[in-house]
Image (cartoon, rainbow, N blue to C red; front, side, top):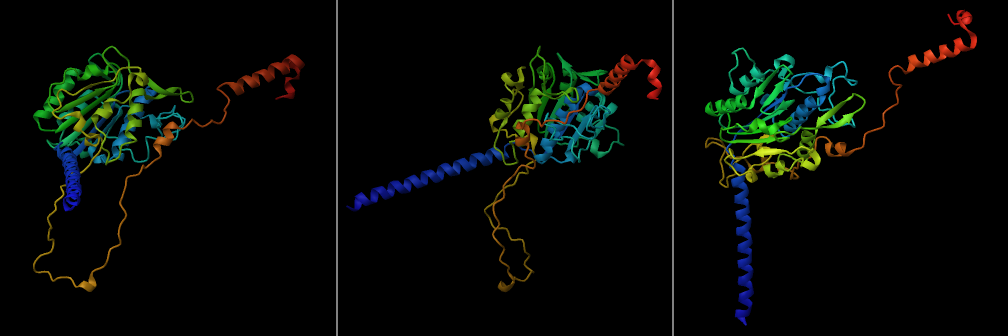
Length: 390
């Protein structure tokens, strides 16, 4: 009888030991994944290369990514923002000092705290390459420098008009995929990055990463060679599109990411399939040393500090200090566990229907109405009664 009682107890002990081992292995796997990247700081270089009002969407693209990386923890001191045109202050903008990425006009991505480092005619191929390679004049302020090192993970995002093997800057010059690949090689040789994520939203974007040859680079593009990258969210009030399709769905994906998210790069590759983008997004991972499944989104889009946990007690008091009396010890109230919350209800804003706008007469309506009144008056009374009006 004792044996019959002992066997279930032994089986229960083995089951508990197995569950503990599985949990421990799962914890160790997550910890290994957490410390695997080897980076200690994050940087972002965000570039809009287009001028003129009809390229409003390219400025909105960059500002949307800028807002997302700031929300996830990368400070302005680690972001180099380059805008080729200032749409917020354009005289055609019906709402000055704002840039919107959605037709409901509720999410102003320009915000109150945007720090533009290079603007207008400062956005050139030369300045962009100098920022990447660190070849800047000594007088250049820190805010315009990429002060990265060999422990830096860098996000580089480009948007504008491009073609097979080139990206235009301000419709006056262009950078080729060979020049960009050589700049990344200089960065690697000068130990300016640990890992680099390159994203480009432009026509034939995949052609820009075909010539890359430096290690630890992962690249994404909104379209393949021979394809156009299409716009999205047309707004009839201002007469332009507000965003490009790929960046729109990228922003929608990033809104569900918080600093503790476990989403990885494979999830990012699935953003904007051809059924949504119309073009075919592409990616390249053969130069990257880690498995994309082990690379968290926050390794590039966030600034998560790595913390090593120790089970050993650490004495922070010196031997000369007197022990604290028991009566002076205050009991601290138990704090509730903290959790991340959205700063703005962006998910709700994106899926809202646009509000009905107040009706305004179209241009020329008032002038046409007065012309009609004068014609009716002349037809009825003739020109001799014109003195009664003036």
